[in-house]
Length: 367
Image (cartoon, rainbow, N blue to C red; front, top):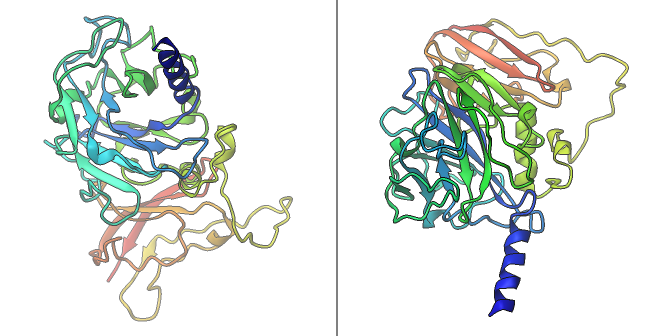
């Protein structure tokens, strides 16, 4: 019996050493009104079996359970946490899971798809969805035990405090896998699986969001603070983030050197361009007339095809994303991603061409 437990402990230590399979926080937001909260999680695979599905049953989503600031009376501590149920027993690496406040869904969150019915590796579900479980108790401080009998889930169990809170993912063994605090929730910080300390990501507050770019998710500089209006729940955050996710999904992810996963992988590379010669300047039109008259019916950005990263998104006047192409090919015809024709008016665009270079502006659409 002692030998059995010794072997079991060795297996557990191997499973959670370094960057083993699990979930990391890819993006989250307090929402524009402080109530339209959501979190976007990214599934990390197993380095030994990079394309194998991941069993997420029992993984825990929580806010500040007392391990940040290490006190039952610390800032932002609230009752409850959410656990992933049996529906999450085989999720592919690189999958995106968006969980949102069922009481006030943010406008830029895509349509619900809790079981990935369209097979795009994106799961969208409310905090009270039946595939999630919840407990209303606060974990035991010191041991951070999450032992409880789960009941129906609700977002309120992980609701985020605008002035500061923590957001974290824990393994079924109650170990911190990923997470950090923001706002006025400060040290001490719990340790990541690598024994590196977690940290405070930024000021916090209504209207702000935080996004993972790429590289080592245990390093603060891998994250950006952004305005909620340009957040991208259900989609990659940046061109680098898109490359990172693509490598998780196609099995080429390098678990030994996380930073190499930021660059794109080109299967059929284009002709080599002399890097001493600067790339052509990008010119983005500010007028577009997709009226099917044969002129200016698709939105063409001059010289864009010379760039590796071409993440292009369109937003309406209320800040809702209405169109997005991760690898834009100069083919937007004035419709949404769902095929609906956009009405005449002014729209806001964001073009990400890599290396943290983003172009923004307005487009006047005429019919």
